[in-house]
Amino acid sequence: MNKMTQCSLCLDDIKHPMGQIFNESGVCTGCTTHKEKDLINWDKKWLKLEKKCAKILKNNSINAYDCIIPLNADAEDYYVVELALKLNLRPLLLYVNSYFGTDLSWKNLHTLETNFDLDLITFNPNINTYKEAVRTSLRKFNSIYWPYQALKTAYPVRLALDMKIPLILWGGLQATEQVGKFSHNDEAEMSGWGRSQHDLFSVDSVDFFGTGAQISDSEQFHYGYSDLKQANKVTGLYLSNYVRWDPWKQNHSILKYGFTPEKSQYTFDQFERSGSSVFYKIHDILRYEKHGYIKVKDQLSREIRHGRILSDKAAKLYAEYLNQDRDIKPFFDWLGVTDSGFELFIKERLAHAQTKISNKNNVKINSKDSFNFDFIHDNELPITKSFLIYYKGISEL
Image 1 (tube, helix red, strand yellow):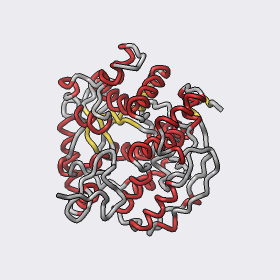
Image 2 (cartoon, rainbow, N blue to C red; image 1 turned 90 degrees about the vertical axis):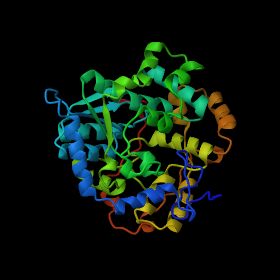
Image 3 (cartoon, one colour; image 1 turned 45 degrees about the vertical axis):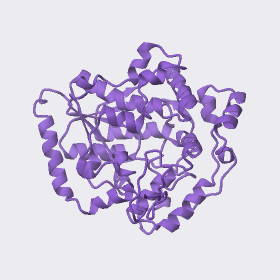
Image 4 (tube, rainbow, N blue to C red; image 1 turned 30 degrees about the vertical axis):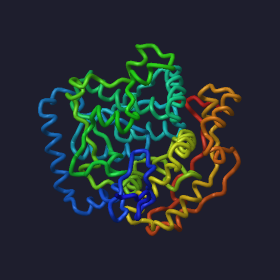
């Protein structure tokens, strides 16, 4: 029986929230699946994507839009839009407001919209309902992620059905790219099952709101998935199944469009967390409490697989990021939690992560020397200021 718990190549271990399996050599499924990238003919994959899109859209000539692109207001959005235009598609952009973004995320969103001259719909869920859903998610799962993931994966399908748009384009499929749950050759598509299993802790909206949440049925509607018979009328494709997915390289390539990265004391990746610094602090704390690691481990494992950092250097760098303290009090203030409630939450729900919580200044980490490639140029990337803005254009400071 295979009792491996730590990958022999990357930093992933058996505690990964999406699950990891190890072969006889101790290599995780994430690393095994990543090796497929060297064996796949990506030119043929792209041609297959073109044909698939043409088939899906053959009866869509009268519609103003060919596809919906759900946005995160991060660098990947720019790359997905670039690929959509390369496919000669007419995309409609959709941003589901998480209320976790800083003004930098809104700047990057606006820059994307104006640079590519595309139409954008922004869905702003009821803020009071959303906060109650986040509080419920904290109580039930020690996570703040369920409400946003539910909205982000449900609303695009509902909008596509309402506007009779047959295609939704997503970027990277994390179940494949992070932990190798699917082969790239499976070409897994968007589904209600995948949404439930990988995004929502296998808990649907009925169960989530069934007990504890004071939310009306009309507001709960937005968090639920469309009827499967209707949802199947819309195809959701993940571009990472058809393009050799390399987030760090891709993200550097879209700087020409005006995207602004954000330096962070908690990761070397200035693209994925840009504009979401407040969210990722609490996300890291909760993930550490529940799974014993923080987000940057995923990013370092990714870079090991791409051959840009050695595993021993990655492990040392991870230890430095793990040692950084995180100030999560502003998030709980925004959520409307009292000081005594905040202190009780730390005591009762963050027993292992308590030592990571502080508002003191951290030591700056030098990550450049750990990587063996030459396209990290921190001094050439725009230096951004820390903000705490939760509503569009309205600062709480």
